Length: 189
Image (tube, rainbow, N blue to C red):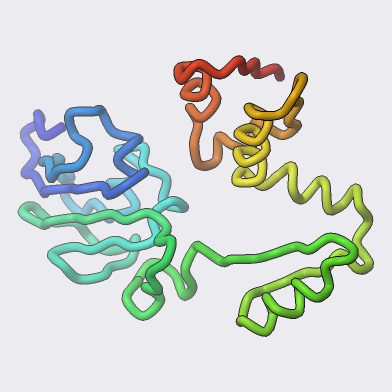
């Protein structure tokens, strides 16, 4: 990537952010050419790395925002959404973390909703929400779609999972991988 006359910085993309890079650049630092006055946002755009998937950016070990100018010799580290580490006091990219756990409980699960709320989780109960609205919210959640697809692998008969396109948010090759692993899957538009 540093094959131009521009000076270079070192870049490393962690976890699933690295999946957007060629295999040879994953899991390691690699040089990238830096244009004069280029911001972190500009670098991400040029490398086709979506800023909405970057939860923490460090330059030379310090948290920075997207407007930070990247300089030759800088060490840039990009991290995706953290699953279980609260980085809210570190990140300079936004005021709140990208990951917000939320639960929606169906009718009859009010006791579970109360326990989740008591534990500090954001919960929306099914009360006042139609079943079709709950179903739509579930269909549009990529994690629910992937869970249903995996559950369908062991179900009897044919399983149809609507909303498969929502999986592309986090795992664009999910169904291809299932197929490669021997699953009988078919994706229709």
